[in-house]
Amino acid sequence: MSRAKKKYTFEKEVNEKIAGTKHSLDTTDPREAIRVLNTGETKRIEPKKREVPITVKLNKRSQYKSPYVTRSGRTVINPKRYLHAVVNKIDYNDPGWIKSMNAELEKFRSKDVYEEVPIPTGVKPISMGWVHTEKIDSLKGVVRKSRCVVHGNRQKEKLDYDPFSVSSPVIDLVTIRLLTIIGCELGMTIQHLDVESAYLNASITHSNPIYVFPPKSVPLKKNHCWLLKRSVYGLKQSGFEWYHTIKRVLEDIGFNQVLHNDGLFHIEYEEGSVIYLGLYVDDILMVGSSQKVIDNFVDQLRDHFEVKVFGEISNYLGIEFRKTESGYILSQEKFLKKLLKDFKLDDSYGKNIPWIPNDKYEKVAIIRENVNPENDFEKVPNETLLDPDAKKLYQSGVGSLLWAATNTRPDISVVVNSLGSKSANPNVHDYEKLIYCLRYIKNSMGYHIEYKRNRLNIPPKSFVIECFSDASFAPGLDRKSISGTLIYVNGNLVQWATKKQTVIAQSSAACEMLALNYTMLKAIEIKNNLMDLGFEVGKIHCHQDNQAVIKVLRNNYCHPHRPIDICYKFLRQLINDKVFSISYVKTNDNYADCMTKCLSRAKFKAFVEGMIKRLDLEDNQTSIQNAITAE
Image (cartoon, rainbow, N blue to C red; front, top):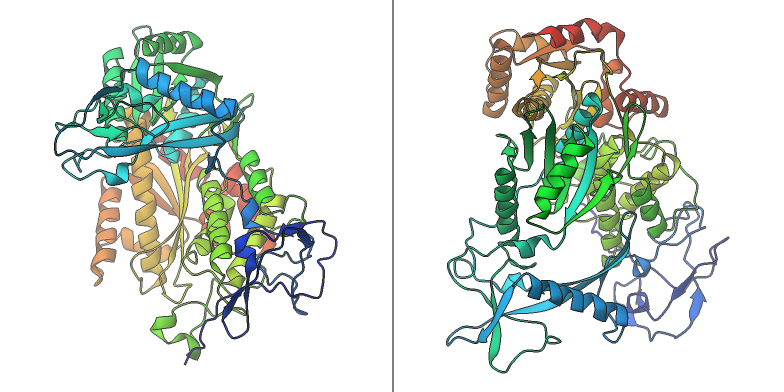
């Protein structure tokens, strides 16, 4: 029978001060006024209005068992000081916030957003409120913004909105990187612009009128309310209305929406100039042949919206772009530095790999205590669960790392995948893994994705898609395998993924087949986008280190498990239709291996350099050339 899990808490009665730290904790924080006794009962301690040195009960074996204390004891994590852009309470007498709110109301009046009308009989208007944000932006400086928003959670389905008219398509991160690669290969200009107060430009098309009460600070006649004429932030249908508004404008200008991506548009002028445009709500990414055609498009767009042009791209959706002689470098250094600062690790030491060495949390053997299905979690040295505050801090850190891993840091995908699987009930050992990964970020801050033109010496306007696929067979107790995917376009890494398979494969060949199927689906999406934009794309070429998979795909075979059999037949049909080709690559040369499991330090470093810098494999040059020349 498994042991009962006990909530992990923090003891303030401590006899040992943290060495080498100047940090102190404000004991007025009510979360720090709870002491959990060994019996599990809680007792309220009246807060003292003074700062006291932080002390913790240290363990002889390890000094960082507390989620607030690092191994060296040199720094402390305080969730109270975790920074957010949203300001919960403001001083309404502050001239800065008054100016911000008046500016928002002026936009409402100038765009004819509402009409003040008597409250109709039998109608209960929806309330509105203010959302205040304050942040520092590298492009916009210090931004203090007030949004007048509708409490959309009080809308009634079918009465206030159509449930089938709420989605708002946007480009994904892969498309952003793909547009960057296109700009690099063709030597085009990449620029960024923003539509101000985007939602207020869209009219409400729902048949039923929407009545709202403005925020209490806004003057209003007695027994009156607002009848909304345009979409307002907070309405469930606002994103949908805005997307179709800007789509109509772009189509009137002459843009065509691609078939396979609702957020991607392109236009070709008579003189041969082109613009490729990616739409992410109100942030527009433009790839143009010249500055002249971009300026012409911006002038046309200004006839419909207020547009702010940031010029040559330097920051888009938090991703930093740096132009080089042969392309662009994508990184998130500022974001990661802020993350380390929030965790008080900006001055700490770093690590060379993102996972704890010799830590058995990837390959788990079946032991007697793990048989109980109600406790299907990995047995680790310390199973003590984090308390609610530490749990939120853990989830916030994992979410930030996930954003970095999906944007510019494929080297931490495996660790983030493992940490994310524990977000529901993280324990102390999981928190140690998180801190260890953050220390690796500290030591590898310079890692980035670099895109260069003409890596493969191919003809202009031609693109080659190359893939690496791998899988780790049944590493966890749930026995679901891990898929690893790397996809390159003209030698530039455009997509990567570490994904737990949804089907339990019964052999290594079966799990490799599922991973290959996922890789091919993603590669075909990229190929479709390129072909929709008018580019020539050769046969997709994939590298695989499982010879059984290659032999099966070249012969007729049926698998008793239906989902896997579907993958077999789908991939074999793609090969017969000459959509993709597959070749064997040694395991030590399969870059996707580092996307499926934790490797040794030396192997990890070599794989990361090969994966990010795309070091071409000598034994694959022939197959690559075959893919280039394929029909």
